[in-house]
Image (cartoon, rainbow, N blue to C red; front, side, top):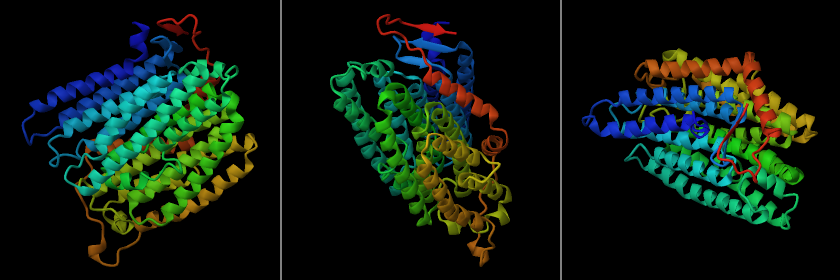
Length: 499
């Protein structure tokens, strides 16, 4: 197999599946179910995940003139993105049934978005990262407004698009300044060029603009203003996807850029990341305390978790990269699981929106209440859950690097977060004052949704009681990122495989 094809095998599979879905969708009669297209998307995603696992046996793969690098780091995020997309598709198969005749387009957009996210994680050329970012962003802009005819949904889509466009402009201008400072947009060449550049100020400015652009994608403060409104208006399964998979891809890009592209400037960018992490934790948790709408509460929660994850970036490279990878996986499992429950409880019309709407959920839907309770205690960071070990590794990495106050702020914010998570958890098991106050019992959990819920619950538990396998892969990813052997610019080869 050609190394070019091998390097992009997961993306090729997802693209073909999405194109087939788009071609097949008009052949379905108006009003007919689109579930077969959803299962085709699930099959394509599963095949892409297997292809990513297959890539792991080839070591490091360089393709397309060294702009694509597939290694343990990119495979880790490929597998994570594939798992998130798989859960999202399973929870969405019955979500649009009877409500949207264009559901096939949704399944294709999810796959196309995954193509962009995977491309971002394997790109070592900033312009290729930008291409992947745009593919991912355009898909999520459309999906955010997929419930047509609802004002809140249209508002979330427009707001996400406008602010996302500004953030993309910052990122692209940062790339241009990096080229001006070092003469290249390839991450490894930028790293070499920083030691000899005649414009260090220009290089610092380029890095600042790149961090601003990525900060928007990960909902880090002070670039978070779009998050609550967009999460509130977008469909619940879309929020579950956009709060995890695009963030995972953006965090992966930021890890490569900071630790592989700008390691010589670490004392300067680490201070900036320190400030952003503290702001994100406090703004996210304090904002969540004021929310009664569950999706807005989880939106502010995602801002806080972006802050927790950014703590890892201030640690030593080996500890920081490994703990960031693990925390990303743990957060993805518990957050996409929580939104899967919200999808099943609220339905397409999202009748259950506020904390009061979830009062007494355990009386009619005990399994869903137990699952949501598990995800909430994991988001808090209670032991024997993925959230606990995620925070443990991140804060331990910060302490090893001497960032004691940052770890203290993280622990303090974890305590603040207990209030709003436990408030929702208590509502699940509180008896309503009257029968009319109980949450409605909607349609039973379907098989695809049950598979998605089981997968996320098991992953959340396994990451808390048996984290070694994922942590080992995360540590391998860190080793590859730190000790990577980039292709020499002078050789400029078409492809190569380093076993």
